[in-house]
Image (tube, rainbow, N blue to C red):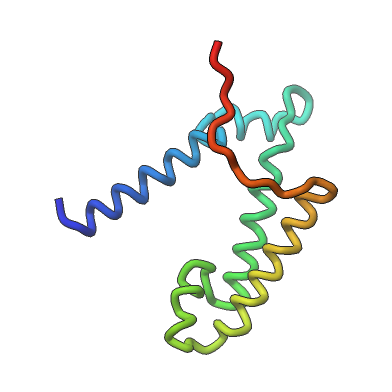
Length: 114
């Protein structure tokens, strides 16, 4: 296995684990979001709002957030406007999602053992 293939496999594994941990790999998550009369699950709306914001920012600026950060050292045109605006947007989103709640550091798994 080449170094590139190993990095790609690791990135895919991390992405897949994040999907599993967040519950997004469960098909019922999407079905419950669409079931307005039954077991409606509003939690997917936050994922969709984030996706819309990223798509809008990408479309308007022409930058995807990750590559925009990597282009900063290359002095790519527009990155000095896009990246600070993106960071401000992240800060504002955190204010709304954590309003009234203190931000705390993760302490790892807090699972109870029976």
